[in-house]
Image (tube, rainbow, N blue to C red; front, side):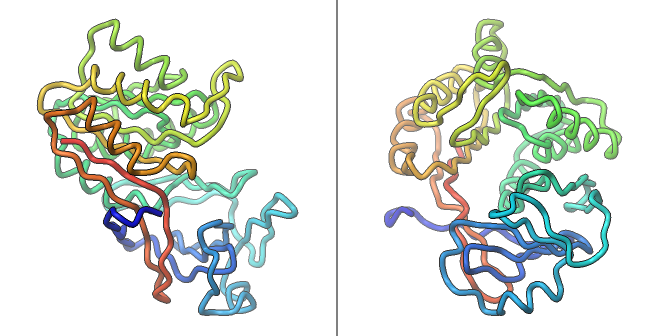
Length: 280
């Protein structure tokens, strides 16, 4: 965490609540389904004992077993609403279910600032909620991810929302972004949510600290005049101050917001979810 940067607390919405947190876990409600998931930032004690969590939860991802344990009968797949969009959720082989709720206020920022017929690119796009919000705003969307089943999932989110202005690209995000620069493409908004570590297309290794400067530089070449960028990072090895200073170099004439992303549970527990930069 960064002493010199402000905290921005992301909001809940009708179909989502962070109910409680602590003991390395978080208790969340997604529509009618309540889940327990591991969370390294929940290093404090929860308000409710875990026995109470298990009474109300439908499922828990247990890290030691590396699988979901079900406490109540429920479908492995379901849908919720995030404002005016539908989202498919799924108990995957890992702790993820297809949505990062802490991004809610960034989705609201996107809806407020992205205009009809403007161009939007989502790099490291996952299941595509930012892409869906952009397409709902009638922007021209390019959605880029390197994992085939994630692209398929994003396509389902696109289809259940009956969206047409939405291109899906199966490619490493930085590779595609550099190709777009060579094509002299420009975008009105760039959304980037790069993982700390992973393997992309053709098992290509990704380490954020080694690639972040190239990613920021490339985005500066892709951005149109008066364009906007949202960058989210989760790596403990990349400090917000370092990222902020880097962004100031490549976007010298832009307004830059740098802040920590947090959520507060219904039980008043505060959970850190990484860092965010908005450039506009």
